[in-house]
Every structure is written in structure tokens, then in C-alpha cells.
Amino acid sequence: MATTSTALNGLLEEALQEASIGETDHFHWHATAVGIAALWREEKPPNTPPFDEAVSEGLEVGLDLSREEREFHQVKEGLVLLFHS
Image 1 (spheres, helix red, strand yellow):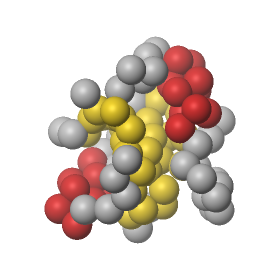
Image 2 (cartoon, rainbow, N blue to C red):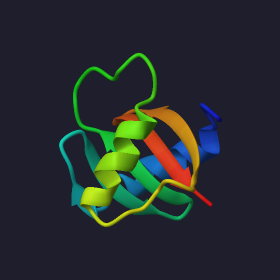
Image 3 (cartoon, helix red, strand yellow):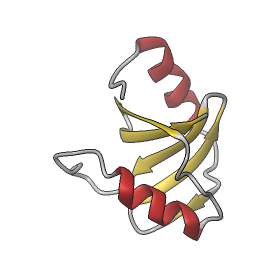
């Protein structure tokens, strides 16, 4: 599980400026060039990345992320959980 990459963070920050593909209780969902990004909506992120919560809420917007690789990144917009193949 990766935590940071300057180039990747730049790509994520660009993608997060685009319209989201959905919203759930805890996340704004974005399709990016590198995968599906779940941006944490609350001001304070949890102590550990909430991957299980994201997988569950992803189903609410039609995304089955249960088999995807998972990473988390801290960008200026906040905590991003990234799901990719």
C-alpha cells in the first residue's frame, strides 16, 4: 500500500478539480487516469485509511472496488483513497 508520490499526487490533484462521478456519506468519487479516487469529505481524516468503508460506499454509486489494488494519498484537497487494477 503506497502512501505518497509527487507525480501521482499532481495527477490526482488535477483530476479532483473535475466534476465528481458521485457522492456518498463520506466520499466524493472521481474517475482519474490512474483509477478511481475517493476523496474523504470530512475535515479530519480517520487515523487509518477507511478502505472498507470506501468499498461499501462505492457500491452505492455503482462501483465494485472489492478486487482493486488500494493506495492512500494526502493531497491539498485532503485524504484520497485510490483504487486501481
